Length: 172
Image (spheres, rainbow, N blue to C red):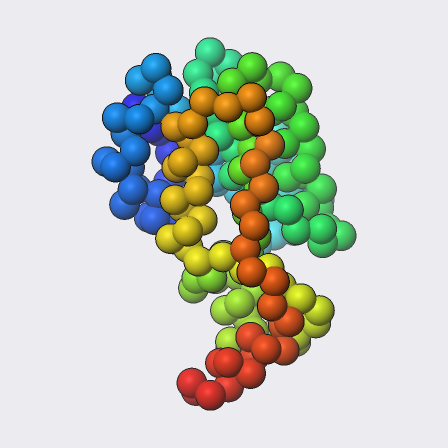
């Protein structure tokens, strides 16, 4: 059985759309928890510490079941990234069946790609992106795969931010 912790949002919807396809493949047909709930909008320390504390409690309450933590490999200097990285370390150290999936920026209705499209963010450097469907499929593949590797980094496509803006400029 695959259980989504929260299960809302664009990634949650994409994961649920794939659930039936992957349900019968869960290792040993045991419960797999996919933890992808996190406050991405408030990057202040207090808000992110609260998310971290919730995550630790959930991990501690489910040590006997497989857990997949959806994270980021973004290196931004903020508390969101800081506490996501601490959560990864906590899961890998404490949970014998814990796996981390690090995703790049997802192309969707939220996030940096949408901000560039809307003109609410200025282009800078390169942005690694992945489609919502591909990200969801890689999370589900990881959830049902038995592997010694417990830290999975899903690669996207690195594109200069200004190119993303140029692409959208022709469609508006």
